[in-house]
Image: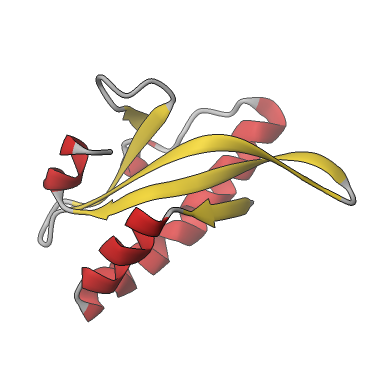
Length: 105
């Protein structure tokens, strides 16, 4: 899966603790596989990723990557990128952190 990061995401990621970054990296591999499956054949998202639309933010989705402390969430949106191979779907990471990121997803 191709992906991009917003400046907000980059700043949020730097503020995560080492443990939070490790947890996020583990789930990103699963997320990427789920994105590929979703784009290829519209497969449902694995329930453990808890992917859902962010209320009041059309086109923005939330993924919960940790419940048991620290609270871990990330927001993202689908974008289309063009390169020499044509147009492709990509996930643009918008924010990462705790529940408070949902105030400005």
